[in-house]
Image (tube, rainbow, N blue to C red; front, side, top):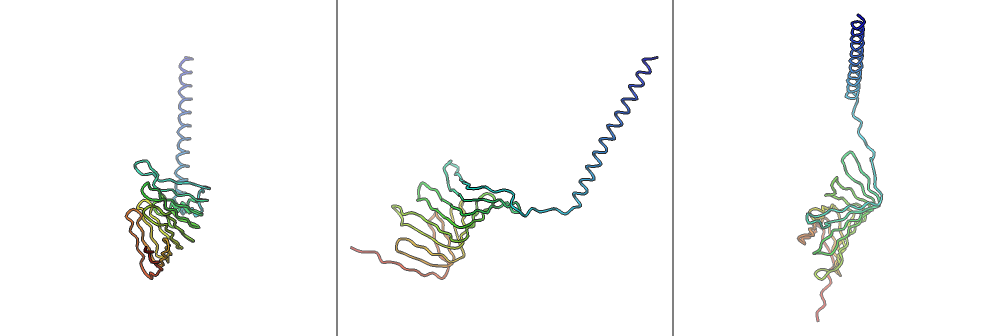
Length: 199
């Protein structure tokens, strides 16, 4: 008789515990549904402030062969989550190639997309390419430049000044392809060409 009562008590206790567990799970489910409903009804809050920054950063893009193709550095890089872009203070870009002299571009600031394949340089943009056995020293100055490092090209729609040796050219709008050597000025082209010395 005692065994039957003990079994019945155990059964009742198990039933009460099972019901309590079901009620607890149901409460958690109901709270989760209510929380989701409230979050869905609230307007989405878009982040407008940068979410992180890096001081004195260095970014290097490698070619498939493992060699460095170009290098981007700066005093500070700030990430903007709205469009996954980067703002760079005092950027320094270097195009690296075993076949050509290293070209260096500096500016006051830059905006780059998420994978650094498009870099927009602003304010006091200067490009320097040292002299080599096949080319003279080259300096280019503008207030804006779009650099596409993966394509080895750069362009601007603003005025530019180009100095190569004793030759000085001015124009508005420019396109340059470092890989092919293509270079063009779009409009308002003028300049000074020094004659070659003959012996």
